[in-house]
Every structure is written in C-alpha cells, then in structure tokens.
Length: 194
Image 1 (tube, rainbow, N blue to C red):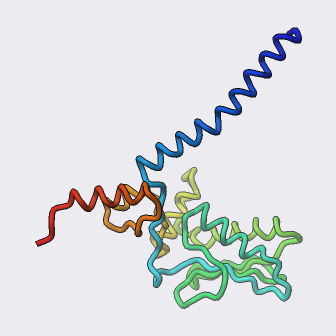
Image 2: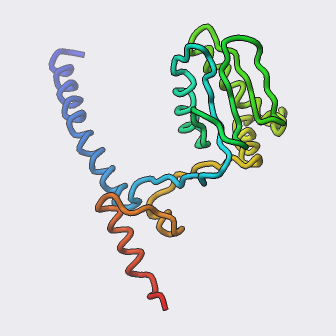
Image 3: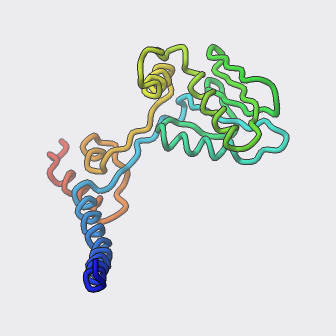
C-alpha cells in the first residue's frame, strides 16, 4: 500500500469514528423513544434472599463485591450483611473446609489466599446450596441452579422495557420524557373507570 492510499484510508477511518458517536446517540434515542428504557421489577421485601456474610477477623470487601456482581449477573437477590430467618447464608470464614448444609440453607466457605480464590470458593458454595436439585446430566447447570433457587422461594428480578411494565401495570413513576410519553399514552387510551 502506498503513502497516498494509507493516508486516504486513515482519513476515512477517522471520519467514520467521528460519525459513530452520532449514530450511537441516534440509535439510543430511537430505542428510548420506543421502549422507555429498562426497568427492574424488584423482589418482595419478605422473600428469602441469599446473604453473603464475611465472618473473618479482617474482612477485605470480597464478600460485598461478590454479592453485588452475582446479584447483577444472576438477577437473584444476593446481598451482603446480616441474614434474616429463612434466608440462604454463605459465610466466609478464616479457615476450615467448605461445608454446605442445604437443609439448613447455609454454607461456610474458607477464605482463599487472595480475593480471586475466595470468590471462586464463594461461587462453588452458591451452586452447592442448590446442588440437590441440579441434574448433573444437564449441560446448563447455571439455569438448573436458578430454577432450584426459584423453587426454594428465592425470587428472580425481572428486567423489562418501561412500555412492558406499563402494560403489566407495575411501572414506576416516569423519570424522563420518553417514559412520560409512554405513561400518558397508556393512561389516556385506557377506558374511564366507573
């Protein structure tokens, strides 16, 4: 490739890169106008949750970070802190062996040498809590674990478009002009209550 061709190619790439954010903004705008964005249907306050407790003498924040990430990833109510009666508990301890007691809804996890190892052990304990309901022949163990969690009363959070939430009747109050337009359209087309 000669210098002129290289320069022309570089100029075209630069122009395309400048145009991409504008196109992305336009796509985002169209998506928001059509859907209103995504909203999450929370879980009932009295539903059992999975609680990660850091029972070590010197907690390092690994349990809290694990709970936040797994909650987002699995859409299960996983949090850190103090458990209530009926919650599933995964406790990080200073030593010992991995002990899983599904009938007691509890697992005790020995801390690893570093945060990554501790998180690996926490993941193993999370799956092990519901392992009795997981069919080892099935290839998708994560889906089986989620089903087992739901079967044990742990609710799964739902993420749907604002438009769908309005149709189902549980949408929160609108927070932007797109959601306001969807809300108003749904409530002005609704028959008057008698």
